[in-house]
Length: 171
Image (tube, rainbow, N blue to C red; front, side, top):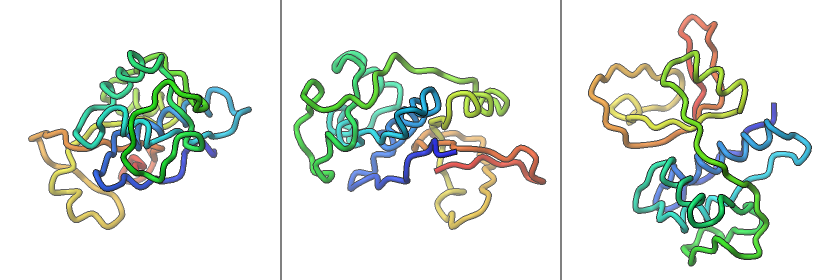
């Protein structure tokens, strides 16, 4: 309970990677140590410093922070310029909201993903948002495509494995 940051606007460039990295990292920190509360991280810093509008991957984004910012991501409260494009500030007096140590990859099977969510909190995924998502308005999406073209990221925040049609809760 309480381990998921509020839904965030992806901004003009629709940078789902920055939104998702910030959400997954903040949630993982909260699950590991609830004493600090759930602290939103700076989507703006992630986007600006990693050229998120130009396209990237979650792994490349975390790698950038590991190599160029000592693994530090600022809190939203200390690095938020209203979403305007600013110069990257990776080593400033901002409050570090997270100290990254690396990326934890999880096997792409239901049991492994469920265990990761139970242990560490929400999971970032890359997926093909093909035709099934283009007309989505609510409910359960059943993807039938076998031709995979990874074109988006989302955060899996939960699941229901006992429903008649088991499903993932994503945002």
